[in-house]
Image (tube, rainbow, N blue to C red; front, side):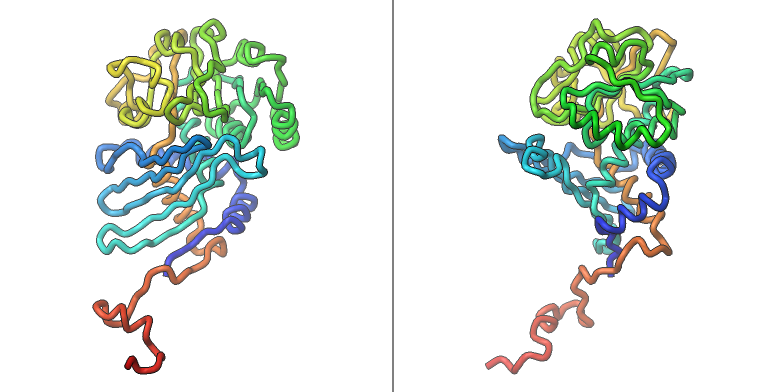
Length: 343
């Protein structure tokens, strides 16, 4: 039997546990796995692109547990009443190859993306940071806000979106949770005076959401919207001014902001900073950029966290996913048991 967390159960778990608590606890799982980064199998995700979006598989293994996520990204989906991103994920035992855990990952991906952002900001942002600008208030925005408050204590948000309905949704969801929220008049207005800037837009195109002149010294940029070939959000001049940190370089050069740069453009993998093998922030005037595209180890960590969190609870069901005949060599017997004799 395989434990399965469906949509209803993950929603119930998140509501009863509290999203902010989940995010702060998940950060520790992700950081522990990043610190042991060399022990994982790593490869860019396997992507199938179409004019409307992308479908991807994201696998990894630490030699004991194997995990993968199926995920799509279709920016035009909301216009048809559908989510931009949907996903599910699986953990399996490397020794037997048997799956051990299966979960929806549309909600879980939003949680792990926000937790990863906050983890990296804790390592790279100025310690006294108190204000975050958010350019884009779509599906990911509330999770990001709660993660940054839970992990870094940021409670002031300066927000901007070209979609008034997305802004209204953001205010409706977060205003009751005690945030100080300022709705800006433009992207430039939103980032003015901010310690951290989060960019998260959905349009599948090269864009300049954040221009170089909008970025002040000392800012940490959490760039999470550019996550596929042909989609970027930052002025390339920002990357030249700042120090760029990535998850897995080979994947980010294909999908991240640095796809705008030469193949030898210097970056630092964030696991090296977390493991003490590379320097992160050097001083209060340094501009740091997290060029995040999402990587399989984050999903692996999130699935492990969820598996442990729901253990001995009512937030999962057991499903009979693997055919398991009494005689391992007699699979045919399962499909003919009780049937009339074959002639």
